[in-house]
Length: 377
Ligand code: ACO
Image 1 (cartoon, rainbow, N blue to C red):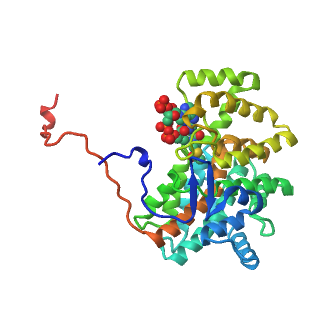
Image 2: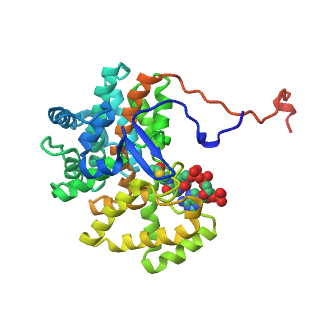
Image 3: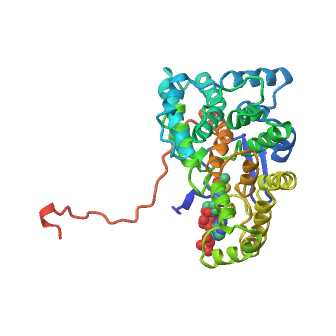
């Protein structure tokens, strides 16, 4: 049997949630092109789609949005614990620990019936934004702001994070960014969630594992790495030389390349337009210009190899404009991707529900003699 390194090309289950055509750069949630959702849908509506497999009717959407809004507040015990979490911790570590603690606080933590999974999933989707916003406030030396039920998920997230109600334009930017990041097939974090859940562990454990996986710089952590790259480059004038040096040293340009897309990631296309809007309106043009030059210069070498900007390349510019420092970029990704994790867990339970247990080709020796400790050299 051939070894499928990185599990590339291995089909381990079926799904209706997401289809990615990596050759032509297309992405669909339940068959609907991502560009349409980013332009016309809301986070709440897209979440309904990803959990139910269809768009909601008007009343269903109202009830669903209200159900999410009711679940936003965090238990007092968790808010108390936050005061004892180290302030220096990375926000992804803060989120990972908070999800795990929410599990301990749930007396029915281990219930993985479909109804329980759906309810607990909604709870986590609603609470992720509150946890991340609370962490931002605490890091700034301020008190967390309780959620409001009268705002949309995106607007309330910005309100809790920044302490002021966002403009409709800011709320729309956040909404679009959340939609774009909500789901993406069996990426490393979703696969981690499914691998954990396939043991019949509880939802909190599976989601904690997924958060841990998303933290890595080859996955969700790449958006933070892109902002560090912009800071390191410093000015548009230095960008071309910086890229040439980096590639000459065989180092990676963060935010470029994707295991599935061999052309431009369609989400990067939408985010590029949003980043351009932000640059034109709010004066983040330096960051945007640096990215455009990096894309062009790195593209000369990398495009022929099928390496183009991915979703993380332009997202940081948008998040900065919305008031977030770079260490919060990956947590924002998590605030969106929790939807995909929960949706896939529900779907996997229904369609497959088999323990994941891949194998490796053994390349070691056999019948190696056991040498007693005192006889070892
Ligand atoms: N910059 C420079 N070279 C690159 C890059 C890059 N960003 N990405 C891939 N390459 C090169 C590799 O060095 C390698 O070259 P070689 O064949 O000469 O050794 C070749 O392309 C193939 O690289 P792999 O890592 O084997 O390809 P893979 O399909 O595993 O890459 C990955 C996917 C890990 C995302 C990679 O492109 C990368 O590290 N990109 C930067 C990090 C990043 O942006 N991650 C976010 C991904 S999207 C997401 O998770 C939301």
